[in-house]
Image (cartoon, rainbow, N blue to C red):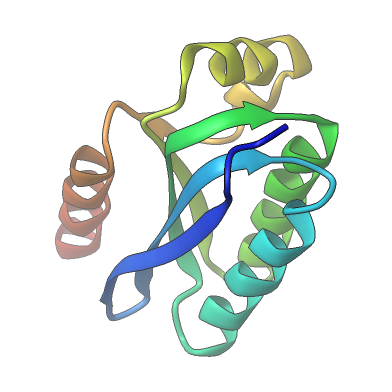
Length: 122
């Protein structure tokens, strides 16, 4: 595969952070995604929004990384929310049952608005 992979953190606010992925989320890039997510949690951002709008490919390693990040977030009293999931990845989440425990939103902005709304009403 040829898509160069990028991890960005375009937003942090209190316990919340957005981790934006672009390119191929696979066996070679999944460890870096997990490591970056754990760094964000350790820095006080256990509530993560994963913006997947730039993901062009995802294999079982990428799915495994999402599950691992979700588990670590739960252990840190945080959460993992998925945003802007490409169609093919959405089908994989559905087939694997991951869509039943990972909240999803059509965009990172929608996920942020929902998370911030939950924070003010909790």
